[in-house]
Length: 432
Image 1 (spheres, rainbow, N blue to C red):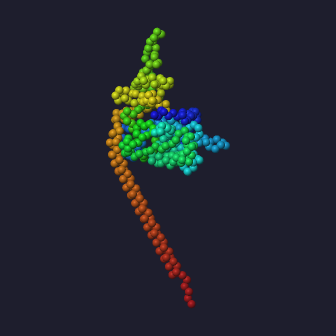
Image 2: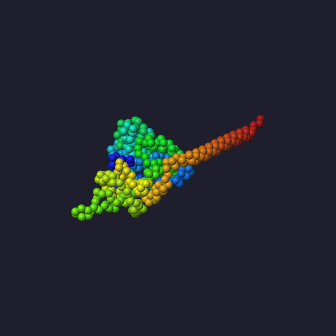
């Protein structure tokens, strides 16, 4: 479902020189020394992560099947003209897409006419389909890196989400309520991703996932107490059903079957070719990992697209029965990840393979939620006890300070009284 949305629909890809300027601006805002894509990337969920969920506080949410992109809120300043509000979507290739039309508005809290500058959100662009058959393009916010010129990457997840709610989503909802016709013209709407407690696993599978108005391919556990990390973050855990665990390979056509007619032997470019899947080993080093297994129907569907396929990134899954790598399909056509510059690194491939071999199922997750809840409640109880002790300590310190202040006042009053009495005794004496 993610491929049903294309950034070209709502945004224009900006030219390299302008993109470089904005990449540098984003790096400066975040205090980074490079201009690479600053977004965080999850690791695949393994059985060993059950202990991590018991040790540390995590939030749980559904894994949306959309286009992952950051949103950068900026402005264009030109002499003699008022500043112009700008929004850019930053894809995983680190390309910058300027949102078209000038209709998008991201108001400030309490000042609907003003807009955010130097703000970077993390989220996914997707199309939501509703029971009446209507659909709407949405940007689903799940994190924030920078707010109005100040990096908040060092803050914990609960604080970052709170700022998204207070300063981004709530003002936009107020705008929608006050000016519904204007907001209806915006290229996409906003929504804040709902976070659950990490032991609400049964609830997620039973009540949330079946009723989502968009595609879903798993769950995400994100640590509540750690900062935002650019690149691979060991504290963002991506769980997928075993059949949904996928790897993004680089596709390479090895060759087409040979055929022969009166003119001689030649390659039959209409026939299904031999295709290799390549893995990224870093620094442009791509190595063969496996062959891609396509059905005849899938190859015909690919040809009907009239597109180049060689060296594109393709999302694949391991068929447990065939023991072969198969393409993930969208409407019968392999899903090409044109939002990505490179295939998955070999370290990611190993992580995904560990998840596949572990085979953590929905039932395994549900079976662990009791232990996760028990550990969460124990930490919650300890935290409450610590808060109560700190409150008691502060109260005692306050009472001691008040007692000391009262004693000091009493002593000052006694000294003042003694001084007054001495002055009266030492006063001038008169005799007749």
